[in-house]
Image (cartoon, rainbow, N blue to C red; front, side, top):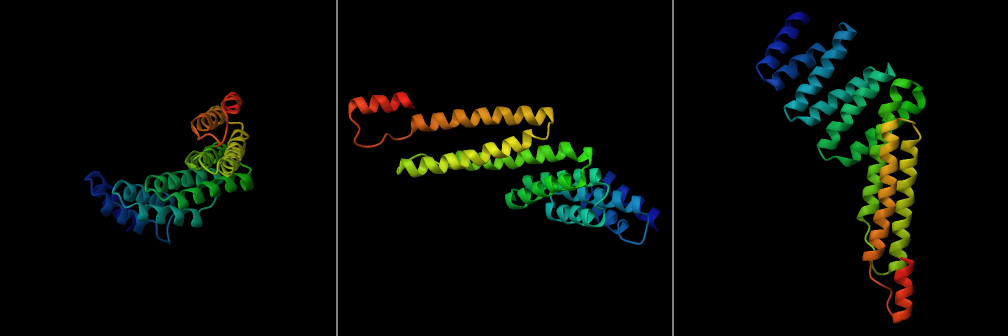
Length: 212
């Protein structure tokens, strides 16, 4: 029976009937059965649902995979990356951030070299959320409070970038360093573009501009 189901799923997939193929692979993943076959069937079904635009079904199957097969850690990390990509594409930022944090935690507890690069990439993606929060904060009146909020957001973003760079993955460290420099540039541009404190005389205004 499993072999018949597998052939039927393959035939549906070859014909472009992704949803039908996904249903057959989902059946194939049900116990009892061969674990390796079930693992592959769950991943195949999730991918086919994603291709068919049914991201909710794809997410459900990937989450089921992680519950059933948390080991080996390297394979779980790859599934978490795919899950995060689907959630990001669907615009579910809350679930995306939750998934990224789960991947970082997996690496912290697994101690597996295979999980280090995926966790570094997840950490960088989390830092990008902090950068977005910094970018979205305007500088206006009251300037002192707005500037304090902006600086606090920047501190959180820089800390997140340092955490990403700390994994020692060259590409991630390079990206984090570039983003950190861009943060300082953006702060400078925001200050130059911000409104000037009221009541400044010409000399005071000139000194304020020089400080900026």
